[in-house]
Length: 276
Image (cartoon, rainbow, N blue to C red):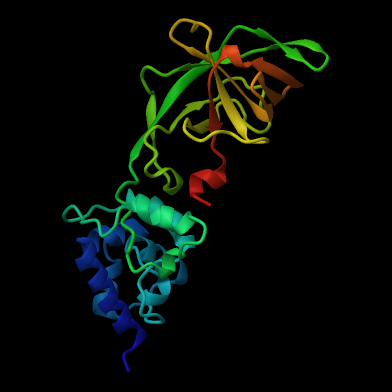
């Protein structure tokens, strides 16, 4: 019967070969130093539990398989966010080949009635996790008056400068395959404390917000300078005549008439971003 460190050495070597990775690159990604796998191979060292988890994420396999407790290398669904996070910390010897498109795997996992990831006989390749989500600058616009339950209220929109992003964010697992996703930094905000000033938010312009979702309403009126006026709020009601939003500071509910709306985009939650 093989000892645990012998199984670990063999399975690390197997994953390195499949993924086209070097011992040095993987070791640096896991510990910040180049010797982890060399010590496992030459000294029989068994890493701590936290390093085993990180090592499995870099090698895109389950910890149970890596330690010889399972014959299935497919990672658990809960490990996928960590696998995505580690992708930017390791360089491959050569461009890896896809066994199945990442978005197909993701859709299969999330679609009702389809098997869970562990039941699918394919290993997901997360090479689409790139630093490519544009983040745009924003500012505070001029007040606009809208109808409210008690009469009229003045709401201050944001101006999103969408011509040229100021930086790009890493694409999390939940946004792989969603090329139109974008983000911006919230300026002085009527949405505090849900979204503090300076907070980056990610937007999906394809998904329609539902009641109680946070939404970004792009106004059809003229831009101020180069900025597109948008209003952020929590959706209370949506009809053919208006979209009713809530803001928190001050707490107001107001209606934006449909003729004044160009489009309504969903503000993504943490669950959306993580693909939960």
